Image 1 (cartoon, rainbow, N blue to C red):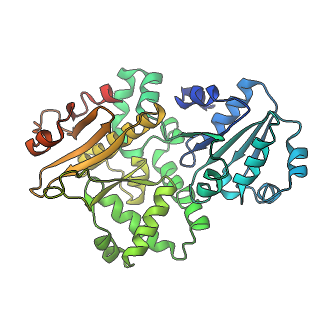
Image 2 (cartoon, rainbow, N blue to C red):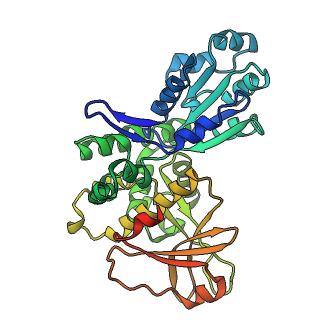
Image 3 (cartoon, helix red, strand yellow):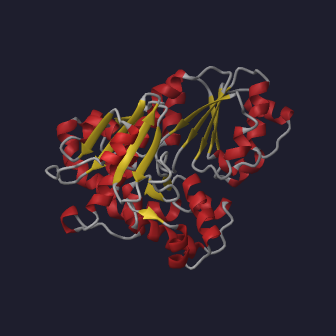
Length: 382
C-alpha cells in the first residue's frame, strides 16, 4: 500500500498493507488501530480499490453516520450492507456498541469483510474485544517507520533526514510536506486531544496539557506519579487516570522496569515515551536544531525505542520490552525479552562514547546480545 502526496507524486509503501490484505477471508473482522493521521483511512481506501470490490466506508466522526449505526436492528443492517462486499467502520470508537453490530454481521455468515479502524482504545476496547472474541484479526499502524522511509528513499537519502525525524517526527504529512513546524503544531492541537476530551470525560483539559508537558520534559527518565501530581496540581489517582487515557489514545506508552532480583533492583518506577518525537516537541514548543539543544539524548532514546516498537508490532514479534536499574544506580536503557532470552540496548548519540554494560545485569540475566545504538549503526536494528 502507498501513502501519497499528490502534489509531489511521492508514494511510500506501508509495511502493514500486505499483512492486512492477507487476512481478507470474509469470515473474521479486521481491526486496525493507531494514532489519528497516520494514514489508516487512505490505506483502506487503497486496499478496497486494489481488491476491486464494492465497499462502504462509514465515518464514525460524522454525527449522522454515527447515529445510523448505533444499535441498529439486524434487518436494517442487512439492508444497509447488502450491495457491498467490504464494509469499513472508520474511527469506530465513536459508534456506540459497534462491537455488537459487527458481531451481528460476522455471525450472519453473509460473506462480507468487515474492517474496523480506531484511533483510541477508549471506546474501542471492551465494546469490540468481548463481542468479537475469536472473530477478529488485529493490527496496529503507526507514523512512518524508519524501515518504510529507508526502503523508499534508500539509506543514503534517508540518513540526512534523521535530524528532521528527531525534531518533527514521522507523521506522513509532516515527512512529505514543507511547513513542518506549523503542521505538527496543528496536529498536536486539533487531533491529539480529540478522543481523550470527548470520550475520556476530562473536565479540565488544562491539567492534561500540564501533565503532557511534564512528561515531555522527562522522556528517558524515570517518572514518579507523586511528583507529577505535585507539578501538575492534581492528585496521584488523576495522574494515573490521565496517563491511562493518553496511552489508550496512542499519544504515549509506558516502559516498565525489569525486576527478577527484587532485593537489588527497582521494581516500582516506570519510563514514559511518546509515539512520535514531533508530538513531544510540539507539546513543549521546542523545534531548535540539534546543535542548539540539550535534550538530544532523550530524543534519540525516544526515537529508537519507538522504532523498535513499530518493528516488533509489524513483524508480530512476541517481545516484551523493559528498562533496568538496580539500587546501586546501574542501568540499561532498553531490554527486549523473547522466548530465547534477553537482548540489551544502550543508546548513545555520540558514536565514540564507550558503553559498559553492568556486570550485575549481565551476570544475572545472561543476555544473548548487548548493543550500543548510535547514528552510525541504528539502521541495522530497524
